[in-house]
Length: 472
Length: 159
Image (cartoon, rainbow over all chains, first blue to last red; front, side, top):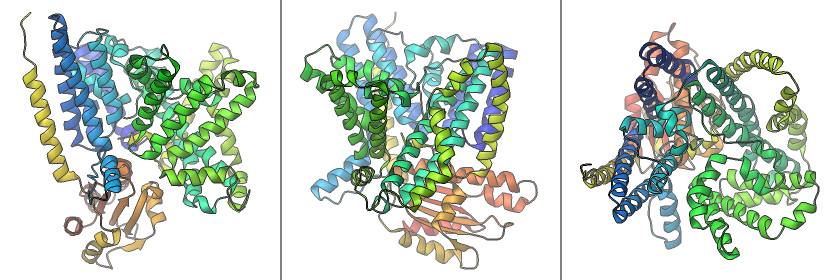
């Protein structure tokens, strides 16, 4: 089930909210009842898409819950060896599950390609959200082993942490240490509820109005093939994708954070206007922040971070970015995308740092945006070869600079591109910041229902509703 | 505090995981190496030419709301009569990781049409309720028809 579907908006969400507030908040006033309602709703939400994979998720929950208890028991008994062996066992279990279900196909087909053996890929359907919930579980196991948190005593609370439906499918990746208190002790109030609803509608409109519309333009550009494209068409296409992926993913994060607020949770932010970044480092401080902080805390810092000699820091960075690429998808173009950012960050850190500081900010922003767009070509292309062909066209390897398609797209969709671009920048928050708090809340009160109606219209009329991060 | 041996539960989980993997590989994996024409031929024979008419890939993309660029091939048949919900779709994907997205798009279409026909065409609603949506690795079968089970059997044999 996705947040932007009629089933979710018309049936699932109102029913869950009604049960939660009536039974959990009003009648029983019990945290256990509230958690149980959310857990059942989350399991139904997950099972809706691919019912068989709920077995895998429950197995993963049970294993890690037990492993957590085992680690804590060993630590209490000062048995470091045992704690370490259970910790390694749990990490191998989690990486093994993720590796098998997400990457088996890639490795089998690559191995078959290299060796010439007639191996057939497994072609198993990908368990939805496996990358997100496995990373959440690993944050629990690692922090527990490091002694940063205590083991969760109740299985169903731990199950709720892993399966909580607002952030189950596409994050943000919520670390256990950030949410453990809220799982046992949270207070719903009108302010967080209304703020949550407002945030959810903003996210929904980013997805349904902007991401889907921009996505259909990029799909039509991509369908024409790089060999028939002009330079102008290629840039318009990738500009649309650049905006689409931002609105798609940040929209989903907004919806998740908003829904969390509705049920009294406070999730971490995942985006902070990444397209105003003036360097690649800055961009990654603003894009998918929960994933970046996960890799920083659990991979980069344990490897030594930047408190080592330069070659070792370069190695650490490359490991992190190779893994970041791999995390995004089981295809070599994602690995290339990760390596591309690793190289750019190393260049920025060690070679271009002094030079970059002398360049005007606007130029730094422009160069960053071009680099990010080139990255999105690698990310969105069906293969590495196709990505390089597209990049070639962007930088002049085309028969023409502008063609009829490019001119048509530019004239018919110019307003949309402009609106999309403005919405990706902090224009709205700047303008509303000029208003007094009272006027601002009035404006939000007037705009939110309007946006919701628009979303419903788009949901009914538009059939193009892909969700880019569904496959991660 | 009393010592508890958790190892047994952990090992049991691993055993269950292996059983689950073997079961899922036996029932859900594989997809097909055959072309979409080879898979759809026996289904189309069972379909009967007067039952539905052939539609284009673009029609399928528009009707179901998925990105046709993600597909290697599409076979889509539907009834032109708006009072008949019968349709049959076979999609072969470039990447089986996209199967969830396409399946969700198909499911959304079925739900939308169920809402549409529920109150004024109960027999069509019943057909939609009995729709078959199956994913086999890189290939997806969807059918709403009086003989959907027969068509699904033909499809399974063709894989």
